[in-house]
Image (cartoon, rainbow, N blue to C red; front, side, top):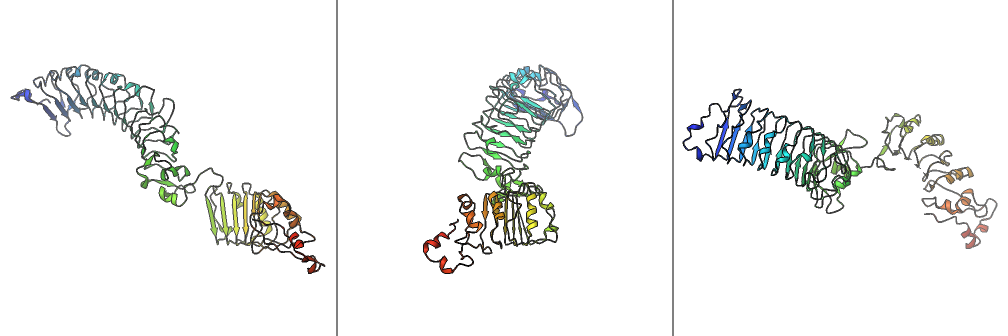
Length: 506
Protein backbone atom coordinates (compact mmCIF):
# COMPACT_ATOMS: atom_id res chain seq x y z
CA UNK A 1 0.00 0.00 0.00
CA UNK A 2 2.92 2.34 0.62
CA UNK A 3 4.06 2.06 -3.00
CA UNK A 4 0.67 1.98 -4.68
CA UNK A 5 0.36 5.04 -6.94
CA UNK A 6 -3.28 5.39 -7.91
CA UNK A 7 -2.64 8.84 -9.38
CA UNK A 8 -0.98 7.16 -12.36
CA UNK A 9 -4.33 5.82 -13.56
CA UNK A 10 -5.46 7.72 -16.68
CA UNK A 11 -9.19 7.21 -16.15
CA UNK A 12 -9.70 6.36 -12.44
CA UNK A 13 -13.43 6.98 -12.82
CA UNK A 14 -13.64 3.87 -15.03
CA UNK A 15 -12.16 1.53 -12.41
CA UNK A 16 -14.76 -0.82 -10.95
CA UNK A 17 -12.60 -3.46 -9.24
CA UNK A 18 -9.28 -3.02 -7.46
CA UNK A 19 -7.19 -5.79 -5.86
CA UNK A 20 -4.02 -5.08 -3.86
CA UNK A 21 -2.02 -8.07 -2.65
CA UNK A 22 1.23 -7.77 -0.76
CA UNK A 23 3.98 -10.37 -1.03
CA UNK A 24 3.76 -13.68 0.78
CA UNK A 25 5.59 -13.71 4.13
CA UNK A 26 6.27 -9.99 3.87
CA UNK A 27 6.91 -8.40 7.26
CA UNK A 28 6.82 -4.85 5.94
CA UNK A 29 4.03 -2.80 7.51
CA UNK A 30 1.78 -0.69 5.35
CA UNK A 31 0.66 2.77 6.44
CA UNK A 32 -1.97 3.93 3.94
CA UNK A 33 -2.80 7.65 3.86
CA UNK A 34 -6.30 9.06 4.34
CA UNK A 35 -8.27 9.41 1.12
CA UNK A 36 -6.02 6.96 -0.73
CA UNK A 37 -8.90 5.85 -2.96
CA UNK A 38 -10.67 9.21 -3.28
CA UNK A 39 -10.18 9.37 -7.05
CA UNK A 40 -11.91 6.03 -7.61
CA UNK A 41 -15.38 7.42 -7.13
CA UNK A 42 -17.04 4.60 -9.15
CA UNK A 43 -15.17 1.76 -7.46
CA UNK A 44 -17.60 -0.97 -6.39
CA UNK A 45 -15.22 -3.75 -5.26
CA UNK A 46 -11.98 -3.39 -3.29
CA UNK A 47 -9.72 -6.17 -1.97
CA UNK A 48 -6.63 -5.70 0.21
CA UNK A 49 -4.86 -8.98 1.04
CA UNK A 50 -1.71 -9.91 2.99
CA UNK A 51 -0.76 -6.29 3.68
CA UNK A 52 0.18 -5.89 7.35
CA UNK A 53 -1.72 -2.91 8.76
CA UNK A 54 -1.05 -1.70 12.28
CA UNK A 55 -3.79 0.89 11.97
CA UNK A 56 -6.07 2.54 9.46
CA UNK A 57 -6.91 6.23 9.08
CA UNK A 58 -10.58 6.92 9.69
CA UNK A 59 -10.91 8.61 6.27
CA UNK A 60 -9.14 5.87 4.30
CA UNK A 61 -12.24 5.10 2.22
CA UNK A 62 -13.53 8.64 1.79
CA UNK A 63 -15.11 9.17 -1.62
CA UNK A 64 -16.08 5.49 -2.09
CA UNK A 65 -19.83 6.01 -1.88
CA UNK A 66 -20.47 3.41 -4.62
CA UNK A 67 -18.43 0.65 -2.96
CA UNK A 68 -20.55 -2.45 -2.29
CA UNK A 69 -17.85 -5.11 -1.62
CA UNK A 70 -14.83 -4.66 0.64
CA UNK A 71 -12.20 -7.24 1.62
CA UNK A 72 -9.45 -6.48 4.15
CA UNK A 73 -7.99 -9.85 5.09
CA UNK A 74 -4.80 -11.28 6.57
CA UNK A 75 -3.79 -7.77 7.65
CA UNK A 76 -3.28 -8.46 11.38
CA UNK A 77 -5.50 -5.50 12.25
CA UNK A 78 -6.14 -5.29 16.02
CA UNK A 79 -8.73 -2.47 15.84
CA UNK A 80 -10.86 -0.51 13.38
CA UNK A 81 -11.50 3.26 13.63
CA UNK A 82 -15.06 4.05 14.65
CA UNK A 83 -15.63 6.27 11.59
CA UNK A 84 -13.97 4.00 9.00
CA UNK A 85 -17.18 2.83 7.31
CA UNK A 86 -19.01 6.15 7.50
CA UNK A 87 -17.71 6.80 3.96
CA UNK A 88 -19.09 3.53 2.51
CA UNK A 89 -22.84 3.68 3.24
CA UNK A 90 -23.77 1.35 0.37
CA UNK A 91 -21.45 -1.49 1.39
CA UNK A 92 -23.24 -4.86 1.08
CA UNK A 93 -20.47 -7.42 1.70
CA UNK A 94 -17.57 -7.06 4.12
CA UNK A 95 -14.76 -9.60 4.61
CA UNK A 96 -12.32 -8.97 7.46
CA UNK A 97 -10.96 -12.48 7.92
CA UNK A 98 -7.49 -13.24 9.21
CA UNK A 99 -7.04 -10.21 11.45
CA UNK A 100 -6.56 -9.83 15.21
CA UNK A 101 -9.87 -8.27 16.22
CA UNK A 102 -11.02 -9.09 19.76
CA UNK A 103 -14.52 -7.66 19.48
CA UNK A 104 -16.81 -6.86 16.56
CA UNK A 105 -15.88 -3.34 15.35
CA UNK A 106 -18.16 -0.54 16.56
CA UNK A 107 -17.82 1.10 13.13
CA UNK A 108 -20.09 -1.64 11.72
CA UNK A 109 -23.04 0.40 12.99
CA UNK A 110 -22.65 2.65 9.93
CA UNK A 111 -23.37 -0.20 7.50
CA UNK A 112 -27.14 -0.13 7.30
CA UNK A 113 -27.14 -1.90 3.91
CA UNK A 114 -24.72 -4.69 4.82
CA UNK A 115 -26.00 -8.15 3.83
CA UNK A 116 -22.95 -10.43 4.27
CA UNK A 117 -20.32 -10.10 7.01
CA UNK A 118 -17.31 -12.39 7.48
CA UNK A 119 -15.19 -11.98 10.64
CA UNK A 120 -13.56 -15.43 10.58
CA UNK A 121 -10.04 -16.14 11.84
CA UNK A 122 -9.91 -13.33 14.38
CA UNK A 123 -9.68 -13.44 18.18
CA UNK A 124 -13.21 -12.32 19.05
CA UNK A 125 -14.21 -13.87 22.38
CA UNK A 126 -17.65 -12.36 22.96
CA UNK A 127 -20.41 -10.48 21.14
CA UNK A 128 -21.57 -7.04 22.19
CA UNK A 129 -24.73 -5.42 20.81
CA UNK A 130 -23.11 -3.91 17.73
CA UNK A 131 -24.53 -6.39 15.22
CA UNK A 132 -28.14 -5.68 16.20
CA UNK A 133 -28.00 -2.40 14.24
CA UNK A 134 -27.29 -4.27 10.98
CA UNK A 135 -30.95 -4.52 10.07
CA UNK A 136 -30.37 -5.96 6.59
CA UNK A 137 -27.68 -8.49 7.50
CA UNK A 138 -28.56 -11.98 6.20
CA UNK A 139 -25.30 -13.94 6.44
CA UNK A 140 -22.83 -13.83 9.34
CA UNK A 141 -19.64 -15.91 9.43
CA UNK A 142 -17.39 -15.96 12.48
CA UNK A 143 -15.47 -19.22 12.13
CA UNK A 144 -12.23 -19.81 14.05
CA UNK A 145 -12.67 -17.21 16.76
CA UNK A 146 -12.70 -17.61 20.55
CA UNK A 147 -16.40 -17.39 21.31
CA UNK A 148 -17.57 -19.44 24.30
CA UNK A 149 -21.31 -18.75 24.23
CA UNK A 150 -23.95 -17.36 21.91
CA UNK A 151 -26.99 -15.28 22.80
CA UNK A 152 -29.33 -15.06 19.83
CA UNK A 153 -30.70 -11.76 21.17
CA UNK A 154 -27.39 -10.11 20.17
CA UNK A 155 -27.86 -11.04 16.51
CA UNK A 156 -29.82 -9.13 13.82
CA UNK A 157 -33.45 -10.17 13.42
CA UNK A 158 -33.19 -10.63 9.64
CA UNK A 159 -30.24 -13.03 9.88
CA UNK A 160 -30.86 -16.25 7.90
CA UNK A 161 -27.41 -17.92 7.86
CA UNK A 162 -25.00 -18.16 10.80
CA UNK A 163 -21.63 -19.95 10.77
CA UNK A 164 -19.64 -20.26 14.00
CA UNK A 165 -17.40 -23.20 13.17
CA UNK A 166 -14.39 -24.01 15.34
CA UNK A 167 -14.95 -21.72 18.28
CA UNK A 168 -15.10 -22.77 21.95
CA UNK A 169 -18.86 -22.57 22.36
CA UNK A 170 -20.26 -24.58 25.27
CA UNK A 171 -23.60 -22.80 25.65
CA UNK A 172 -26.21 -21.25 23.40
CA UNK A 173 -28.99 -19.06 24.79
CA UNK A 174 -32.35 -18.91 23.07
CA UNK A 175 -35.47 -17.01 24.08
CA UNK A 176 -38.72 -16.89 22.09
CA UNK A 177 -38.90 -14.26 19.34
CA UNK A 178 -35.12 -14.22 18.85
CA UNK A 179 -33.54 -15.59 15.65
CA UNK A 180 -36.99 -15.72 14.04
CA UNK A 181 -35.62 -15.76 10.49
CA UNK A 182 -32.60 -17.99 11.07
CA UNK A 183 -32.71 -20.94 8.65
CA UNK A 184 -29.19 -22.38 8.68
CA UNK A 185 -26.66 -22.61 11.50
CA UNK A 186 -23.20 -24.21 11.54
CA UNK A 187 -21.79 -24.91 15.01
CA UNK A 188 -19.40 -27.69 14.03
CA UNK A 189 -16.12 -28.03 15.88
CA UNK A 190 -17.31 -26.46 19.14
CA UNK A 191 -17.70 -27.83 22.68
CA UNK A 192 -21.45 -28.35 23.10
CA UNK A 193 -22.17 -31.45 25.20
CA UNK A 194 -25.99 -31.67 25.19
CA UNK A 195 -29.17 -30.45 23.49
CA UNK A 196 -32.32 -29.49 25.33
CA UNK A 197 -35.96 -29.34 24.36
CA UNK A 198 -37.03 -26.87 27.04
CA UNK A 199 -35.76 -23.82 28.86
CA UNK A 200 -33.34 -21.38 27.25
CA UNK A 201 -29.97 -23.17 27.43
CA UNK A 202 -28.77 -25.25 24.47
CA UNK A 203 -32.16 -25.08 22.82
CA UNK A 204 -32.16 -24.44 19.07
CA UNK A 205 -34.33 -21.76 17.41
CA UNK A 206 -37.56 -23.23 15.98
CA UNK A 207 -37.41 -22.13 12.32
CA UNK A 208 -34.07 -23.69 11.40
CA UNK A 209 -33.94 -25.90 8.30
CA UNK A 210 -30.30 -27.02 8.44
CA UNK A 211 -28.18 -27.56 11.56
CA UNK A 212 -24.55 -28.69 11.65
CA UNK A 213 -23.42 -29.85 15.10
CA UNK A 214 -20.67 -32.18 13.92
CA UNK A 215 -17.47 -32.62 15.93
CA UNK A 216 -18.79 -31.28 19.22
CA UNK A 217 -18.94 -33.25 22.48
CA UNK A 218 -22.65 -34.01 22.48
CA UNK A 219 -23.32 -37.09 24.62
CA UNK A 220 -27.00 -36.52 25.36
CA UNK A 221 -29.98 -35.22 23.39
CA UNK A 222 -33.06 -34.76 25.51
CA UNK A 223 -36.24 -36.36 24.20
CA UNK A 224 -38.31 -33.67 22.53
CA UNK A 225 -35.29 -31.52 21.68
CA UNK A 226 -36.57 -31.10 18.11
CA UNK A 227 -40.29 -31.15 18.90
CA UNK A 228 -40.59 -27.40 18.21
CA UNK A 229 -38.54 -27.53 14.97
CA UNK A 230 -41.16 -28.43 12.36
CA UNK A 231 -39.12 -27.06 9.43
CA UNK A 232 -35.87 -28.89 10.20
CA UNK A 233 -34.72 -30.95 7.20
CA UNK A 234 -31.03 -31.73 7.88
CA UNK A 235 -29.16 -32.40 11.14
CA UNK A 236 -25.46 -33.28 11.18
CA UNK A 237 -24.29 -35.00 14.38
CA UNK A 238 -21.10 -36.63 13.07
CA UNK A 239 -18.14 -36.97 15.41
CA UNK A 240 -19.88 -36.44 18.74
CA UNK A 241 -19.98 -38.61 21.91
CA UNK A 242 -23.38 -40.26 21.51
CA UNK A 243 -23.56 -43.83 22.82
CA UNK A 244 -27.35 -44.02 22.42
CA UNK A 245 -29.90 -42.04 20.44
CA UNK A 246 -33.61 -42.42 21.10
CA UNK A 247 -36.00 -41.77 18.25
CA UNK A 248 -37.94 -39.40 20.49
CA UNK A 249 -34.86 -37.17 20.62
CA UNK A 250 -35.08 -36.37 16.89
CA UNK A 251 -38.84 -36.36 16.33
CA UNK A 252 -40.67 -33.13 15.54
CA UNK A 253 -39.93 -32.07 11.94
CA UNK A 254 -42.92 -32.34 9.61
CA UNK A 255 -40.81 -33.51 6.67
CA UNK A 256 -38.55 -36.55 6.83
CA UNK A 257 -35.46 -35.47 8.74
CA UNK A 258 -32.08 -36.41 7.23
CA UNK A 259 -29.37 -37.30 9.75
CA UNK A 260 -25.60 -37.76 9.71
CA UNK A 261 -24.30 -39.85 12.64
CA UNK A 262 -20.90 -41.27 11.63
CA UNK A 263 -18.09 -41.14 14.17
CA UNK A 264 -20.16 -41.49 17.37
CA UNK A 265 -19.13 -44.19 19.92
CA UNK A 266 -22.51 -45.94 19.78
CA UNK A 267 -23.09 -49.02 21.93
CA UNK A 268 -24.94 -51.97 20.41
CA UNK A 269 -28.10 -51.09 22.28
CA UNK A 270 -31.64 -52.04 21.33
CA UNK A 271 -32.51 -48.34 21.39
CA UNK A 272 -30.75 -48.00 18.01
CA UNK A 273 -33.00 -50.44 16.16
CA UNK A 274 -35.19 -47.61 14.91
CA UNK A 275 -32.26 -46.38 12.80
CA UNK A 276 -32.50 -49.59 10.77
CA UNK A 277 -36.22 -50.30 10.89
CA UNK A 278 -38.30 -47.18 10.28
CA UNK A 279 -41.80 -47.44 11.71
CA UNK A 280 -43.31 -44.53 9.77
CA UNK A 281 -42.73 -42.95 6.37
CA UNK A 282 -41.87 -39.74 8.17
CA UNK A 283 -39.31 -41.38 10.49
CA UNK A 284 -35.82 -39.82 10.29
CA UNK A 285 -33.46 -41.33 7.71
CA UNK A 286 -29.73 -41.76 8.38
CA UNK A 287 -27.78 -40.84 5.25
CA UNK A 288 -24.51 -42.44 6.41
CA UNK A 289 -26.10 -45.59 7.90
CA UNK A 290 -23.73 -48.06 6.10
CA UNK A 291 -20.73 -46.52 7.91
CA UNK A 292 -22.14 -46.60 11.46
CA UNK A 293 -20.61 -48.98 14.00
CA UNK A 294 -21.24 -49.88 17.64
CA UNK A 295 -19.36 -51.55 20.51
CA UNK A 296 -20.75 -54.75 22.02
CA UNK A 297 -22.27 -54.34 25.47
CA UNK A 298 -20.44 -57.43 26.72
CA UNK A 299 -17.12 -56.51 25.12
CA UNK A 300 -16.60 -52.79 24.60
CA UNK A 301 -13.35 -53.42 22.75
CA UNK A 302 -15.17 -55.21 19.95
CA UNK A 303 -16.97 -53.04 17.40
CA UNK A 304 -19.39 -54.17 14.72
CA UNK A 305 -21.00 -52.47 11.79
CA UNK A 306 -24.46 -51.45 13.04
CA UNK A 307 -26.26 -53.36 10.30
CA UNK A 308 -24.21 -56.50 11.02
CA UNK A 309 -24.88 -56.17 14.77
CA UNK A 310 -28.60 -56.08 14.05
CA UNK A 311 -28.37 -59.19 11.85
CA UNK A 312 -26.50 -61.03 14.63
CA UNK A 313 -29.06 -59.99 17.26
CA UNK A 314 -26.41 -58.03 19.13
CA UNK A 315 -28.53 -54.90 19.59
CA UNK A 316 -29.59 -55.77 23.13
CA UNK A 317 -31.14 -53.87 26.01
CA UNK A 318 -29.07 -53.28 29.12
CA UNK A 319 -31.86 -53.47 31.61
CA UNK A 320 -34.41 -55.95 30.29
CA UNK A 321 -35.00 -58.94 32.59
CA UNK A 322 -33.95 -61.52 30.00
CA UNK A 323 -31.43 -59.74 27.84
CA UNK A 324 -29.81 -61.60 24.98
CA UNK A 325 -26.39 -61.79 26.64
CA UNK A 326 -26.13 -65.57 26.51
CA UNK A 327 -22.95 -67.61 26.98
CA UNK A 328 -22.81 -71.17 25.60
CA UNK A 329 -20.07 -73.56 26.78
CA UNK A 330 -19.67 -76.94 25.07
CA UNK A 331 -17.28 -79.82 25.81
CA UNK A 332 -15.11 -78.02 28.29
CA UNK A 333 -13.45 -78.59 31.64
CA UNK A 334 -15.58 -76.39 33.85
CA UNK A 335 -12.95 -76.22 36.59
CA UNK A 336 -10.47 -74.75 34.08
CA UNK A 337 -12.85 -72.14 32.71
CA UNK A 338 -11.71 -68.55 33.01
CA UNK A 339 -13.99 -65.98 34.61
CA UNK A 340 -17.23 -65.27 32.80
CA UNK A 341 -18.56 -61.70 32.31
CA UNK A 342 -20.62 -60.57 35.30
CA UNK A 343 -23.36 -59.32 32.95
CA UNK A 344 -24.26 -62.84 31.72
CA UNK A 345 -27.96 -63.53 32.25
CA UNK A 346 -28.15 -66.99 30.67
CA UNK A 347 -25.50 -69.74 30.77
CA UNK A 348 -25.70 -72.99 28.83
CA UNK A 349 -23.31 -75.84 29.72
CA UNK A 350 -23.29 -78.86 27.42
CA UNK A 351 -21.13 -82.01 27.63
CA UNK A 352 -18.92 -80.56 30.33
CA UNK A 353 -16.68 -82.24 32.88
CA UNK A 354 -14.76 -81.26 36.01
CA UNK A 355 -12.58 -82.77 38.69
CA UNK A 356 -13.79 -80.37 41.34
CA UNK A 357 -17.13 -78.59 41.24
CA UNK A 358 -16.55 -74.88 41.89
CA UNK A 359 -19.81 -73.08 42.62
CA UNK A 360 -17.88 -69.83 43.22
CA UNK A 361 -17.44 -69.44 39.47
CA UNK A 362 -21.19 -69.13 39.12
CA UNK A 363 -21.73 -67.05 42.25
CA UNK A 364 -19.81 -64.20 40.58
CA UNK A 365 -22.52 -63.98 37.90
CA UNK A 366 -24.79 -61.61 39.79
CA UNK A 367 -27.19 -61.16 36.85
CA UNK A 368 -27.54 -64.86 36.02
CA UNK A 369 -31.24 -65.76 35.81
CA UNK A 370 -31.19 -68.87 33.58
CA UNK A 371 -28.91 -71.94 33.75
CA UNK A 372 -29.04 -74.93 31.42
CA UNK A 373 -26.92 -78.05 32.03
CA UNK A 374 -27.17 -80.94 29.56
CA UNK A 375 -25.33 -84.18 28.77
CA UNK A 376 -23.25 -83.69 31.87
CA UNK A 377 -22.79 -85.94 34.94
CA UNK A 378 -23.65 -83.90 38.01
CA UNK A 379 -24.38 -85.08 41.55
CA UNK A 380 -27.34 -84.17 43.74
CA UNK A 381 -25.08 -82.21 46.10
CA UNK A 382 -23.60 -80.24 43.22
CA UNK A 383 -27.07 -79.39 41.98
CA UNK A 384 -28.27 -78.34 45.41
CA UNK A 385 -25.32 -75.97 45.68
CA UNK A 386 -27.03 -73.93 42.96
CA UNK A 387 -29.39 -72.66 45.66
CA UNK A 388 -26.68 -70.13 46.52
CA UNK A 389 -27.27 -68.36 43.18
CA UNK A 390 -29.67 -65.73 44.45
CA UNK A 391 -30.58 -64.27 41.04
CA UNK A 392 -31.28 -67.66 39.43
CA UNK A 393 -34.96 -68.16 38.52
CA UNK A 394 -34.82 -70.85 35.82
CA UNK A 395 -32.90 -74.17 35.88
CA UNK A 396 -32.96 -76.74 33.11
CA UNK A 397 -31.27 -80.13 33.64
CA UNK A 398 -31.45 -82.60 30.77
CA UNK A 399 -29.64 -85.88 30.12
CA UNK A 400 -27.84 -85.78 33.44
CA UNK A 401 -27.49 -88.49 36.11
CA UNK A 402 -29.94 -87.12 38.68
CA UNK A 403 -32.53 -89.58 40.08
CA UNK A 404 -34.59 -87.30 42.30
CA UNK A 405 -35.85 -83.74 42.49
CA UNK A 406 -33.20 -81.39 43.95
CA UNK A 407 -34.36 -80.62 47.48
CA UNK A 408 -32.89 -77.12 47.83
CA UNK A 409 -34.30 -75.49 44.67
CA UNK A 410 -37.87 -74.77 45.64
CA UNK A 411 -37.20 -71.02 45.34
CA UNK A 412 -36.95 -71.25 41.54
CA UNK A 413 -39.83 -70.16 39.34
CA UNK A 414 -39.05 -72.73 36.61
CA UNK A 415 -37.49 -76.19 37.08
CA UNK A 416 -37.11 -78.31 33.95
CA UNK A 417 -36.02 -81.91 34.64
CA UNK A 418 -37.04 -83.62 31.40
CA UNK A 419 -34.86 -86.40 30.03
CA UNK A 420 -33.33 -87.56 33.33
CA UNK A 421 -33.50 -91.03 35.01
CA UNK A 422 -35.83 -89.84 37.75
CA UNK A 423 -37.18 -92.57 40.05
CA UNK A 424 -40.66 -92.70 41.56
CA UNK A 425 -41.29 -89.28 43.10
CA UNK A 426 -41.71 -89.15 46.86
CA UNK A 427 -43.76 -86.80 48.99
CA UNK A 428 -40.56 -84.85 49.73
CA UNK A 429 -39.93 -84.41 46.00
CA UNK A 430 -43.44 -83.11 45.49
CA UNK A 431 -43.03 -80.59 48.30
CA UNK A 432 -40.30 -79.00 46.21
CA UNK A 433 -42.53 -79.01 43.13
CA UNK A 434 -45.26 -77.32 45.16
CA UNK A 435 -43.03 -74.27 45.45
CA UNK A 436 -42.04 -74.07 41.78
CA UNK A 437 -44.27 -72.28 39.26
CA UNK A 438 -43.38 -74.31 36.15
CA UNK A 439 -42.18 -77.93 36.00
CA UNK A 440 -41.05 -80.32 33.28
CA UNK A 441 -40.80 -84.05 34.12
CA UNK A 442 -41.05 -85.80 30.76
CA UNK A 443 -38.48 -87.37 28.47
CA UNK A 444 -37.45 -90.81 27.30
CA UNK A 445 -35.37 -91.57 30.40
CA UNK A 446 -38.19 -90.94 32.88
CA UNK A 447 -40.61 -93.70 33.97
CA UNK A 448 -43.27 -93.14 36.64
CA UNK A 449 -45.44 -96.07 37.77
CA UNK A 450 -49.16 -95.48 38.23
CA UNK A 451 -51.46 -97.63 40.42
CA UNK A 452 -55.20 -97.71 39.93
CA UNK A 453 -56.32 -98.89 43.36
CA UNK A 454 -53.55 -97.27 45.42
CA UNK A 455 -52.47 -94.03 43.70
CA UNK A 456 -48.86 -92.95 43.98
CA UNK A 457 -47.93 -89.58 45.52
CA UNK A 458 -47.46 -88.24 41.98
CA UNK A 459 -50.95 -89.37 40.98
CA UNK A 460 -52.47 -87.68 44.00
CA UNK A 461 -50.44 -84.55 43.34
CA UNK A 462 -51.64 -84.37 39.74
CA UNK A 463 -55.29 -84.54 40.75
CA UNK A 464 -55.08 -80.90 41.78
CA UNK A 465 -55.65 -78.53 38.89
CA UNK A 466 -52.99 -76.03 39.99
CA UNK A 467 -50.38 -78.79 39.86
CA UNK A 468 -51.45 -80.05 36.45
CA UNK A 469 -51.12 -76.50 35.11
CA UNK A 470 -47.50 -76.41 36.27
CA UNK A 471 -46.49 -79.27 33.99
CA UNK A 472 -45.08 -77.85 30.80
CA UNK A 473 -44.54 -81.02 28.74
CA UNK A 474 -46.45 -84.27 28.29
CA UNK A 475 -45.76 -87.14 30.68
CA UNK A 476 -46.09 -90.60 29.20
CA UNK A 477 -48.41 -92.64 31.48
CA UNK A 478 -48.72 -96.37 32.10
CA UNK A 479 -50.88 -98.19 34.64
CA UNK A 480 -49.62 -101.21 36.56
CA UNK A 481 -51.55 -103.61 38.87
CA UNK A 482 -50.92 -103.46 42.59
CA UNK A 483 -48.72 -106.11 44.06
CA UNK A 484 -50.96 -109.06 44.95
CA UNK A 485 -53.73 -108.04 42.57
CA UNK A 486 -54.53 -109.91 39.41
CA UNK A 487 -54.15 -108.29 36.06
CA UNK A 488 -57.77 -109.17 35.30
CA UNK A 489 -58.88 -107.06 38.26
CA UNK A 490 -57.22 -103.99 36.77
CA UNK A 491 -58.65 -104.56 33.32
CA UNK A 492 -62.21 -105.64 34.07
CA UNK A 493 -63.80 -102.74 32.33
CA UNK A 494 -63.10 -99.64 30.34
CA UNK A 495 -64.54 -97.59 33.19
CA UNK A 496 -61.93 -98.91 35.60
CA UNK A 497 -59.16 -98.22 33.09
CA UNK A 498 -60.52 -94.73 32.68
CA UNK A 499 -60.14 -94.16 36.41
CA UNK A 500 -56.46 -94.95 36.02
CA UNK A 501 -55.94 -92.03 33.68
CA UNK A 502 -54.03 -89.31 35.51
CA UNK A 503 -54.46 -86.34 33.18
CA UNK A 504 -53.84 -85.21 29.67
CA UNK A 505 -50.94 -82.83 30.01
CA UNK A 506 -49.81 -80.38 27.36
